Amino acid sequence: MRISTLLFTATLATVIPPAQAEVLAEAQVGIKIALAKAPSTRPMTVAHAANFKRYYIADGGLAPMGSETEAPISKSQIHTYDEDGKYVSSALPGYDNRSIYYNTNTKKLETVTYNISSFGGFLPNTGIFAIDLTETGEVKTSSTDIIGHNPAFGDANTMPSYNPNTNQYYAKQGRSNKVLVVDLKSREPLSEINLDLTKTGAAFDDISDTFIAYSGIKGEELVILDIDHKAVLAFDLNGKFVGKSELPKTLKLRSNNHFTGAGYANGMMFVFNETEGEFGTYYGFKVQKN
Image (tube, rainbow, N blue to C red; front, side):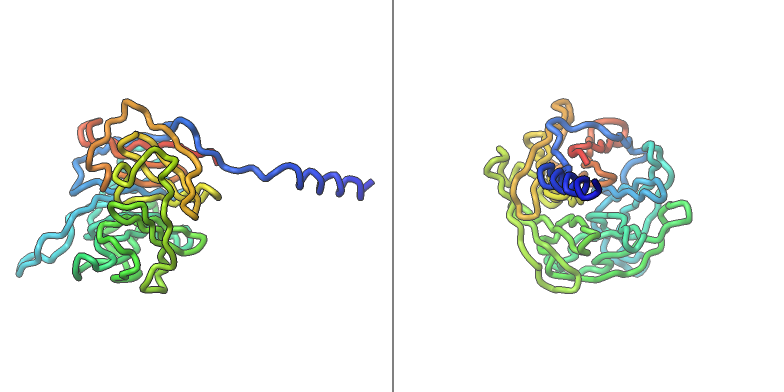
């Protein structure tokens, strides 16, 4: 009897494929975070720390030129919100943030700055840094270095996403369909992914110029915003197109959405709507079943 049961179970395993994620035809709003204060510079991206139940929104902007009285520190702040989108606090770690993420391996909030590749020349406070948090998950002004310049990231404006399973980064290159795969141990890209846009209905200048998300969902790992067609496109790690999720037609996107105001956190694609609310609103869209 036991042998028969085992054979039956094995047979089911061969005929029933494992459950897989699915790209939703229409994106679903998971959360709205209305900015509670004017951005210190330009709203760039979003991170989420499940253990603290906190969202983090990072601004990004170049530091002023240094002088005898002022250090060349970026005025960009990182803002903390709770899981209901309620404002908690802001802090000034002093970096021109391009992307932030909560590293589940190190249990740290980390930021990748503008010009990490040094393609725009050598600048102070450039690289990847771990931002210190309080016991309740609020951002401090202090931080520690992770790495400095690394030319493997390519475009100076890239907003890389982090894969905690492989400790690799995906760095979208400007005005192209190219994504560089980066390991911090190497000064050259490990590989190059070319997103196949032929079946998406979009061209390279329709999609986000410098940001691509890592979703962590097998077969749909890379997710990007199609600004001109108000959609989110999903690709596998070979660059193969696997699905499209339509955003609400009423969502107002601007040219800035090509370069800023994007993110992927807590299983959602974040898109900045600059015209909603006093200071703008981030929408978190569920675009995949998982």
